[in-house]
Image 1: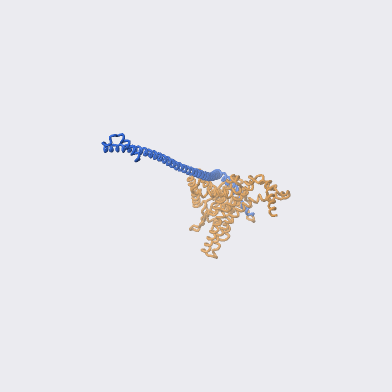
Image 2: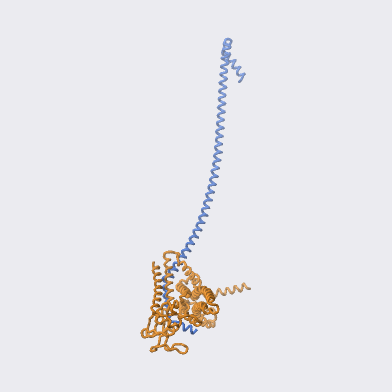
Length: 396
Length: 165
């Protein structure tokens, strides 16, 4: 019953969002119009394609769906604006991103209270007091403006919220099903094996039968969050959530913190006083182990970020083939080639989307498992020696 | 690398951390905990049911074995009883036959004795009747000649003893 209400509310929300977007467009309030053709315009040359791809990879402050030229040849953009929330010198400021008029070069200034903001390469800058226009130095860095702490509901944050809501609804519904029946029906039948997969293939073997339960909440959440984010990145909505370095840093940092806080005595001993090696070696191993401590989350964050970014760049590059190869192959040839290659790569990306979620969760579980593993050194050393003797005897 | 650091948005990082924490807390409470509990409960239930089935199977096997033993025993008992009954029957038949034989022998012996006695009595009777008849006949034939009855009688007696039928 409640589920139905939720569903209706969810779709109503989406519908209103689109409706407002359309309305804004007609009112001219959300005017991504022909005056500013900095990057929402037609994409025809190699430079434009490069900058378009570059722009896509970055987070954006509005939700752009598609663009078209109307009968009068005027470029129209369809999408909706998202709220901007910044912490400036004047305190917390809130306004809609439509006030930037889709400008990304620091040309449009937005006044909110006493502070003036502008957007430059997807970043929000606050102009120093007294400045009326942004000035650049030789390297195109602004001289009279500084970046602010930008807590905006950007496209990625919007996506994350959407995914979070989706996960709560879908898995909450699954949880509810178990109250009345032992075996879920409908979509729950698809979700249950996924949960079981994370539990039985990722958490249990890596963390251990007795301790895995404590970390399941984190592992499951992260797994589905990354997976759905990756999948959403493959849709034409153009989300690039896991391709944002801040997002992957955050995820990796969570794993790092959980590992450090659940590390037992053995774990710390292996880092600062490696058992079973000479004292000199123990001292030499400390910095190596400490570096290892930090490279683990670093590898996590870079792997996810690089894989998703590379996937997006290649897919967009292949889509752009229909423009870049038009001269050589003609319209039909370049389009056909582009569609074929994009389709092929999209299938691979579909696999990568799962694989990266799996690897991230798997390695997180592995690091947690290493931190909570119980091993008795004395006994271990003893048996090892015995084994060596045994092996030697067998050889002799 | 510098671009990457430049691209890092602390605000996005903050929002992501916030969303992730809230999501983990909510998912744990409303989704993962009930799901995992239900799953492990179900698995335990299945394991128990399997163990119970295995036990039942073993019990069944035991029961069957004991049943078979009981049947075997019953069969043996039945055989024994049949054998006994047959023996008794034979014995009874033999006994009865013996008794009947004995009785028959006795009856035959009695009958023979009776016949013997009857025969003797009849002979004796016949002898006396023959004697009487002979006397009568002789008397009638020789009434006149033989007036002395006693002397005649003695003669006939003598003659009869000589004849010895």
